Amino acid sequence: MASAGDKPVMLVGIDDSEHSLYALDWTIDHFFSPFSHCLPFKLVVLHAKPSPSTMAGFSGPASAAVITIIDADLKISAARIGDKAKEICSRRSVEDAMVEFVEGDARQVLCDSVEKHHASVLVVGSHGYGAIKRAVLGSVSDYCAHHAQCSVMIVKKPKNMH
Image (tube, rainbow, N blue to C red; front, side, top):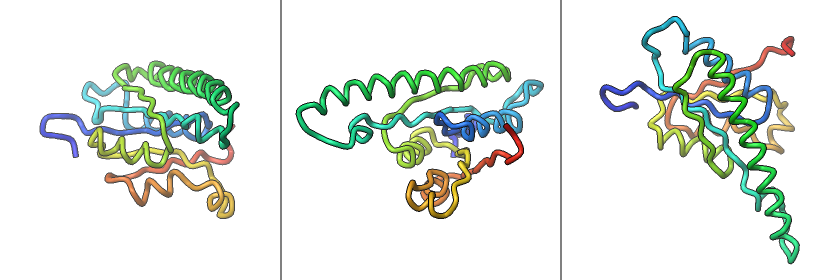
């Protein structure tokens, strides 16, 4: 999917869960060896920041103030997640990783970003939800596996890891 002469793009979706940060760690361990002089992929780490209006879930005269507070909290959370991702990359000597933040539903943001970056691989962590929780909350990894225009790798954190 990358244009001629460019490295293919590996896009890793992250949120504030230990599962997604594990997926980023795992990806770097398996594809971005510090001993390799020519890394096989360009790494793009993406956090989909929820829209404050979808987080508020109501309307009315007080909603603007609530949305402002929620937006400030979401920006702080996104910055913290981005800092964690940058620290993981830096600690593993992956200095040229790009970290992006895009507002919207994670499922759509990831699939749109695959197209924007012409990604060859999308990596997402698995939260390990059961069937009922997955049906109620929706599964980002399941959605991406069916809708992303590239290969999708779902990384599961072993149960015995803390």
